[in-house]
Image (cartoon, rainbow over all chains, first blue to last red; front, side):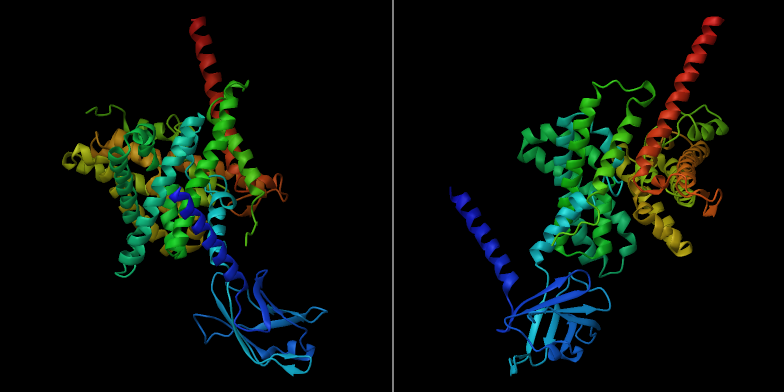
Length: 318
Length: 210
């Protein structure tokens, strides 16, 4: 009871945070500033603004919050017919994962000045994290669109129970191992300039975390260990578990983003295994030509799944 | 300790055909599907794997008497990781464009089951010279598989080989899509199976006739 109340409270806090982050602007006349497409910023005003003022490029100054000396060049400005929405088109694509500062000179609306405004434009961070999770899980699924971890994928997708067991074990280990490698890379390898040793260090950390999960699970929950212990050995033979720390190091993700990506990679593998095992259980009963029995037909089924997952490509969330 | 009785030639041929890592043992499938879309990728990754396999086989067979059996798997992994780092840095320095095309796969050679398996099955029980030839066999077997796949896919997808246009049209553009690797591997495995079935049937007939 106490637990559920706490969860409810946390949920409410999260919703409040999202609402607050969505609507907050620092100026009374500016209602909303958002990113749009790849190189647009849209400003919504509370009332109609002067067209000549709005179309003047000199009235807007935009830069990334962290580098105030690099001003971003505006190519064109458009105004909606009701004169409340201004769209700034930029020459280059904006790095939307970073916060941008937008300074507007002396807003003029119906002949009256509304004062200058300094605004911050940023994406919803929770939304961004969520998009990393969904991206790793479906849009860039490691098995079907990056073709990693195939040995273990074909080896353990014969039965549904095996597939689920392997998937869950893998998710636990990959989150553990990726966070460990992320910490090691960001705080030890990079500061002392040993980043060329990443392969050696990451594979060592992966084996270490497999061993750690093995030991902890054996002591803490023997029943769970009985169910999932056999899959732990296989986890290390899966290239996804090494690919994820390498991708994290390459993209310089922070702790939350790393957590989301590794969670997405693990659950994505679980989804792929589950889908595949459902098909392969049915294939046992089908009349497959003898030359295609076993692995060849499994590869062709995986190819069909990959075609289906191609449909997710190019999808953008938030 | 079962020291091998095979000759060096036999070891290489085994790796190339009857124990081909991609089509027969079905190990290290990720690159076979992921980056076999051109012959060049196949050759380069093949060279990288050959290098890592040969050098780690030799290292392990030299050190085999000093490795405690209980820590042998971590030792193999560390040896492989060291050689992978070497080839990774070399490729990044001398062929940067092709290195970019291969992406993360060069670093992932560490996780290829085929290399660890050869160390466990062969190199830790045999002297240096057979281990060397076994490594050569497995490496070239892998390269052979990758090049076969690359040839099929590049020829059918772009109508050319190694970037040169051969027939002027693109017969089946589908094969250049990354995911066509799944279909290609499936079909080629089926062909290998078919050859095996026909070969066994002929052998049985011959033995009955005699």
